[in-house]
Amino acid sequence: MNNEKVRVRMAPSPTGPIHVGNLHTSLFNWLFARSHGGTFVLRMEDTDRERSRREWEEVIYQEMRWLGLDWDEGPDIGGPFGPYRQMERLGIYEEYARRLLETGHAYHCYCTPEELEAERREAQLKGVAYLYSRRCRNLSEAERRRREAEGRRPVLRFAVPDGETVAFDDLIRGRIETPTDSISDFILVRSNGIPVYNFAVVIDDLTMNITHIIRGEGHISNTPTQILIYQALRAPLPKIGHVGHVLGTDRAKLSKRNGDAFVGEYRERGYLSEALLNFMVLLGWTPMHGNEFITREEMIGEFDLSRVTKAAAVFDPAKLDWMNGHYIRQRDLASLTELSLPFLQRAGLVGEEVGPEERGRIHEIVHLEQERLKTLADLPKLTDFFFKEVIEYDPAAVKKVLTPEARKLLGDAAPRLLGVEPWESARLEAEARALVAEKQQTPQAVFQPIRVALTGRTVSPPLFETMALLGRERCAKRIRAVIEGGVN
Image (spheres, rainbow, N blue to C red):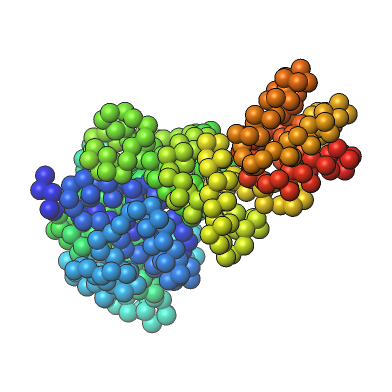
């Protein structure tokens, strides 16, 4: 393969953000381009004029950049084969539509929606698949003029040949053949002059010199009609491969419950971009060394379509959480603190302006929780007791741990613990362990009432580091509230 000639594309509709299905195929295209030193093209399929918005384009750019999927040509940066928005390419589609019309591969169809619906109902009653009747395929000039005089605005249909077979060698699935007798004369251009998807995508790929098309298996049914257009234009056919669907853990179509979310939602939920990318690349592709954790550079170096499976892959949110937790633990603390700040701010635990002293304290708090985090969105609920003056107590923890005996023990321990100098975790722990020995208690019996009194819960970061960060004053206030019966 001549690496310099590889050109692949991603063509989202700017009607909303990218969801994981888009991300999956986009990632494979990007990796294929980068692994072959090729070109990755980003273009916008914006023919849905009611829903397409430039602001959605900006969201798509933002999400792609967050994932590190850069592009070489696109609406925002230009390139030699622009424009890269379909609504700016209408003149190009008109030229190719005219060529198909002049060569007899297309014709104007004047059928009304009511007439077409009647045909569909008739096919349904007969129990056969609906194919357009072709009633407009061989109209005379006089018949066309009469229909136009009636005010009918035609669509442009493709004249599908009879008795042939459309075949191609799928890069992932092997040989696929479709008889043309099962293909209806499909629409190329609507009556308003806007091309339909199958026509526009062929002209875009053709005029942008796309060499490889890697997309989801849902497009297999579109491929025969697209190949017919290429053949009618006597144009070379790109190599085409269809990757398997991404399914939920129930092996059904993805839903909000089991993984079907927009890329930006994963960022808002506290996932790291490298974790999401690593997770997604393993859906339907296996690296040579079989490792679960693979860097972007390793993905590029190892990516090969021969290792892409045609079988559906399962999106397992639990595995994504596990993988994200790994990447959180691998992150350097400074960058993890910066990534954590927005989550603490949205929870109202931190203000918009964070000074050096407060940032340092947050740095220490993040450090204490880094080993336990699955997502950054977990951080506020795990650490809110560090930031709040008045904390909420888990009723079950209070009932189980803060018994009358435990409160008495806290009363005996408080003067010694709160009088520790200097106020450091090592000194606090030493004093607490001395109390354990003197009271002839287990560490659990002494430490757990302190933990619940200070955090309101039975699980927290290491106790004595927590005490050191909370500070003497807050610790004293919370312990005294428990001793005096203010926590029930």
